[in-house]
View (cartoon, rainbow, N blue to C red):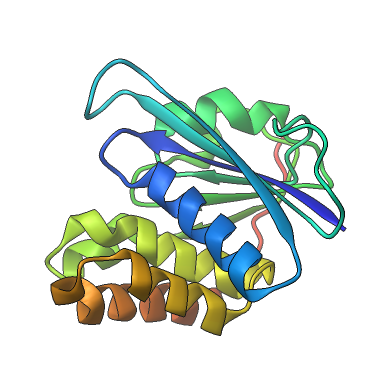
Length: 185
């Protein structure tokens, strides 16, 4: 079993943190191995950003994502750049608040969640990444919900645990009603 995952968006969205949390949850709470590589532009906020995560039940000999089977796009720029690279065996998850899936060609099915909108309803747009982690956990079934929740609560400041727990729960709840969008060519 090997999963290659690319979280993408812009600086300030917590993209790298999301990758760290999923990798940590997988390695500390399951028998999976993980590697994480990250890239970001020179801007501290607003520049392109990606976290590439590999989860596998065997040793990982090359740490870079070659054929992602899961793309999480939290910005239009990230979607436009990475969606055309995905094949029909993969899955694209978008933040529908910020991404128009018709703006670039794609060959993989798409699931969407209004992560930024949900975070806004919680009065803290900064937790959109945690909403997204809840959604990804609910639809992709890569890491158990309890492992993700525990890792999130251990990684965030103590005074924000309730907020982050609620953000994660809302993402999980949205996953239960998610429907695949068709493939456009």
